[in-house]
Length: 393
Image (cartoon, rainbow, N blue to C red):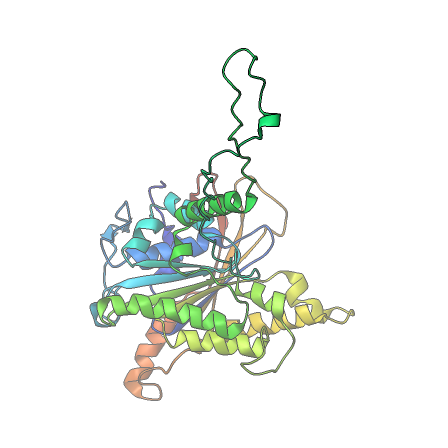
C-alpha cells in the first residue's frame, strides 16, 4: 500500500465537509474519478481516529488524523461526537471492483460492512433486470415399485429340459430423466456462490428498479439502518457514483413531477431529499464536452445532451466544492495522467448559521475561505498510488 493514501495537496478538500454539503466530482473519458472518490471515502472513514478495517494510521504534516478543525469539533466526527459512516451507491461499477480498489488503500470493505460502518448499494447489476425468481426446492426422486414379477403361463415357461436354473424376469425399471430437478440443484448452488461473492445480495442492497422513487426509498432505508445502529448519533456520508447514468437511461424531459421516472426535475428533487438525511453528499458525473457544450454548436442538441447539461449545471450551482478531472490539452505524457481543477461552488445546501449577523458573517466567511480554487496535475500509478503536484514541480 502506498505510504500516504491521501496526497497532501488534496487533504484540505477530501476531509469531512460541513453539514449539508454537496461535493461534485466530474470526469471525462480517459480521466475517471475512481481514485479520487475512494480518497474521499477513505478520509471519511478514517479521519475520526482508529477505525476498524483500516490497516494504517495516516499522518499529515506531522499530525495524526483526528485533529480539530476551525469549529473546535474533531474532524471526522459527526453531530454529538458520533462516528462517520458511508453509504456507497454505484451505478457504474460492481461490488467486486470497489472492494479490490479499496483494499489498495488499506480499506477492508467487507469488514467495514460487517461492523455497520459501510454499506454498498449495487445500482449496476440489477437495475434494469427483473428480480430473480426463487429457485424451487428439488423434488424427491420417484420411488421404485417393489411388486413381484408377473407369472408366465405354462405354455410360455422355459423348457424343463434346458440347462441351468430357470431364467428370472428382469426387475430393472428405467427412471425417466428429470432435467428440472437437476437444473434446480444447479441454480441453488449458483445462487449460493453468488451470495458468497457479493454479500450485498443477501442484505437486499441491490437496486432492482430504475424509478426515482424506488431508488430514493432504497437509499433512505440503508441510511436509516446505519443511523439507528448508534441511536441517531451517527453522521452518514452518502456517495452517489454515476447518477447521470440513470438520467440518461430513463430521461423523458423536463417536468412530470415526482411520478415521472428519469426527469431532471425528479432527479434534482431526489438529490435534495437525500441531502436532508445525511451529513454530506458526494456525487460523481460525466462532464464530457459533447454533453455540456453541444448547445454552442449549430446542430440542435438532443434531449440527452439537454438533460445532462441541465442536471450537471444545477448540481454545480448547489455544490460547495467541484473537483473536475480532464486530460492534458497538449496530449498524453508518461508521468502525467491528467489535470485536477478545484472550483468553489455556491454552497446552496442548508441554512447558514448567523447569516445576516455580524458574528455569523465572520464565521461563514472563514469557512468559505477554506476552499481555495487551484489547479493541479496528477499521476495514477499502476499500483494504485497517486501523485498530485503543481505545474512546474
